[in-house]
Image 1 (cartoon, helix red, strand yellow):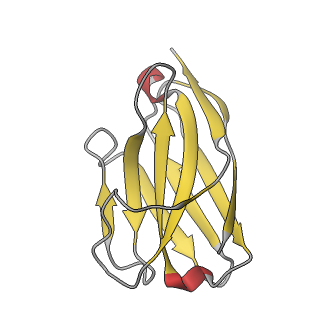
Image 2: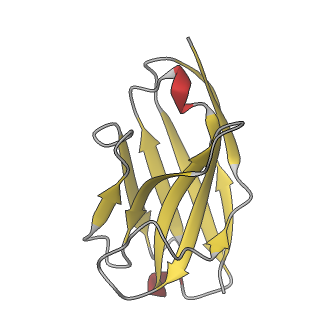
Length: 124
């Protein structure tokens, strides 16, 4: 089973951009679908994006579609989340997740491996 470690969070002004990274280790990364989620204080965890093991099939949550882009490099065992046009309401702890599947339809459910999360704060 892979282990996941996020990095790249921080403080950014509204309208700015950040790129989060998630490094995987300890497993066959190219057999996993990956996803990004976030959780703000007092709110439920929100699905942001997912990507299948081939990088051909993506799925985005409605609040970030068109602003965030998920990508991966299996050779580097890394997933990224490029976040543009950030808003104060994007402030949250962002976590990457993985689930072992060869399906090219990757829904928000079933992720069973999680990173520790990285804080993103967007100031107005």
